[in-house]
Image (cartoon, rainbow, N blue to C red; front, side, top):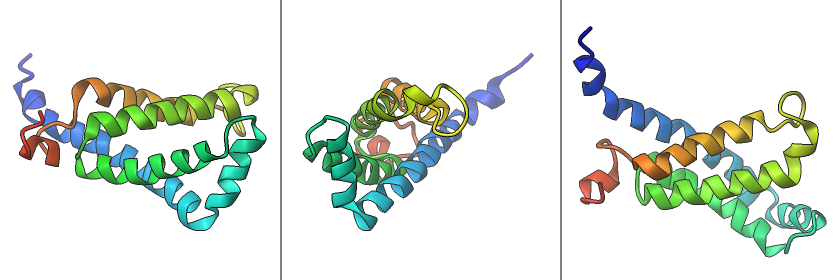
Length: 134
């Protein structure tokens, strides 16, 4: 079986992974940054972490989402999102189990996508590629 067609559309796959992860992170971050940044920081503090990490988390999601959509500093943004999702799993979702209300299946999926992007980079449909940061 000749799979050369799949090789030719591989850049589209990287773009779709980045774009979908970016949109999800942008939307989640937007609600935190513009709809209750201080509240999110208090929530983070209530879990025994420094409140300033709430600000880091919100801006990681918002700005990281924008970076992923554009494909700029992709590996750095993916690394930050991966850490953000791992902390969310450990501190918020783990006690609810894998599936069900509040479970960690969704943040685990986002962490896995971001983990893959750390190693693959943005792909050819990206600002990173245009700037020579392949």
